[in-house]
Image (cartoon, rainbow, N blue to C red; front, side, top):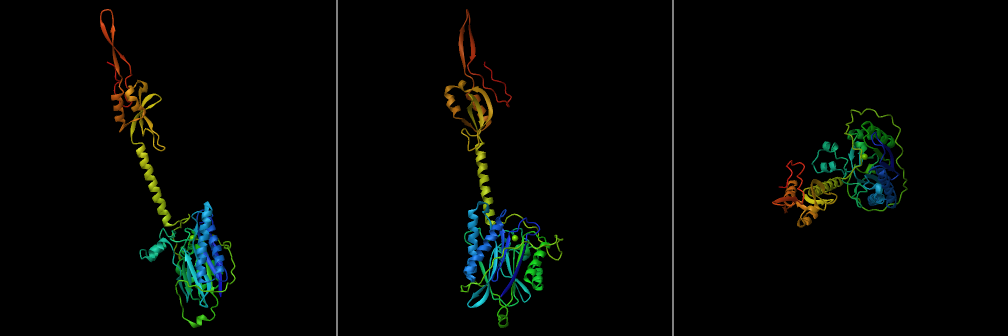
Length: 432
Ligand code: MG
């Protein structure tokens, strides 16, 4: 027989509580939602409700693991249906009393970084493994426990419900003995209250509800940087098993078994307990740096986003450089003009006027006009000006004029001189 109680609190920093907990006669759970606005609350509530319903249909260890997979699918489906819920997710940790081979056992399941602890014979052990970046590194021997506890990426989960259509579920079996006490907690507890302090409260406060409330209170005192949720589960009666065996803690995969369906009753997270205004952080409790207040994301999504932005930025830069790299001699409103850019433009990079020549297109030799009309490309502004000077220079005609006694040569300019570039300061070409 189990006797359980829970407490939850928004903490001192967050504006809403995205944690949820469930306490029934045979099933207890904690979920810590993530996602912008109300998405985190939707994720954790959806998961807890789906877990409860699915477990009622199959109250075995396998049934509990399957219930977590159903909860994952429920959160995933909800996120796909509703645009503003995209990317939401949640952790889940649950313990259930199930019957395996005609014996009562406790099945513990976990996805994410909420935790299940077991207090037995006065010693507190963490049953679950956190699915977070620093904890994976610690298990691989690449970080020390203290480095993992203060790692800046300890909010980044490697596994959560709702972020993929399928999820891997950790499942542990615990043979219960009278006097055993389990605690389920969101990271808002153990990021603020150290292991020794959690063990002390669980050892000294006999009432599960009061023990949960006291742990929540200590987490607020320790900083309250996140939502805090604790569920305490006591093994009140083990049918005399504790007389028969020494302490046993196994962590083996769940095996299928049949069991009668016990009643289960859903109890949503109650309003935060009335607490006094936050007091200064206690010196006895190590305080961790403030937690990021935004939604948590998976490491894979962060890498993907950065890679995508880098590729897009690089491509746009290259196109922009290419589009604005050259010059050409073209025509605008009948005037020969030097443009910067590409003759037909490129994407939204339109050519711009770099210099006006003062030469009218009509005055350009007919054989040169198609070249100008299609845009005669040049490698630089100087190159473009050279082309204008050398090819669009005024044409001259010599007309003999007869007077009474002498022949005088008069030169008529039939095309104006090419105006020099404004910036060059060269003298205007003059007809001879
Ligand atoms: Mg949290």
